[in-house]
Amino acid sequence: MDLQRSVRAVATASGDGSGGIDWEAVVTAARSATDAGALELTDVERAGYAADVGDARDRLRSVGGLDFDLPATVEVQNRHHWIDANVATFRRVMQPVESEVNVAFPAAVSVFNTGSMAAVLSFLASHVLGQYDPLLLADGDDHELYFVHPNIVDAAAELEVDYPRFRRWIAFHEVAHAAEFGAAPWLSSHLEARMEEALETLSQGGFDRTAFRDLDATMTAVEGYAEMLMDRAFDEEYTDLRRKLDARRRGGGPLTRIARRLLGLGMKRRQYERGANFFGVVADRRGVAAAAAVWDAPVNLPTDDEFDDPARWLARVDP
Image 1 (cartoon, rainbow, N blue to C red):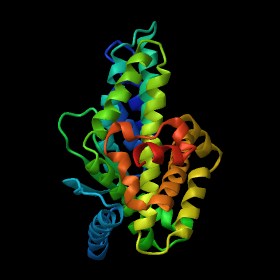
Image 2 (cartoon, rainbow, N blue to C red):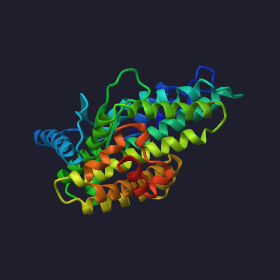
Image 3 (cartoon, rainbow, N blue to C red):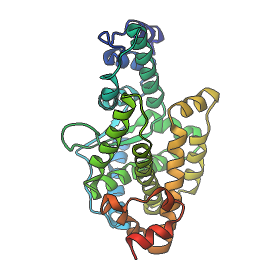
């Protein structure tokens, strides 16, 4: 890490006079503030990642009753690789807001916005274990799958669980997301539309409550279904992994907990838990494969009320 370089990059940021974000400075600052982590994989580890992903695909297809393929890009990364892979996505998402920026002190605002975005990327790069990336708002239909190796190794040690088993469980979670987007070709465009509606209103100083509610409902379905499916398809004992990872999501030191709140990660945890409870009930009553009806069409996504009453959703989509 080079914190001085990170600070210099932020302090000299230029938003082209608009108060926007200097994305080159974001990358420099985020990478300089983040320990890249080791990525010297043994042949056994490389083979392990490949086997985990392939086995997850086969098990999820069978247990979930889903037809999907793996993304063309499956990478094992360090933290700097993850920053590089995600900054383009952050830039696409923020563009509608940036384009409407009009402030009295653009240079100062640019420094603040650049520093904030660099801090977000640095924090996430140090905590993300794996990521299925549908490349929202990008041209084309490419999807990608990443594993942040040093974070997986560190988390396994922190949680005191077997590293190969933990790595395999994370692979099942990320491939479960690939299963969702593969089974629902409409899902990427649906998320993009909700996101663009919400961001457009924000850029104009408003707040589209309906768009954000729809976005939250969709993400609750995405996260909750993956949680249910990964657990039911996993071919080893997972109870201890689930308990310890849930505690990790809630835990951390005071600064980590504050950062999670500021980044909305508490909402993400709520999406995990609420969605997993919903799909768990559906799977118990009608079977795991029946839960896949949620991906048949956007109209099958549960409403906010249905997340609290799975029987209502079942009566509507599977009478």
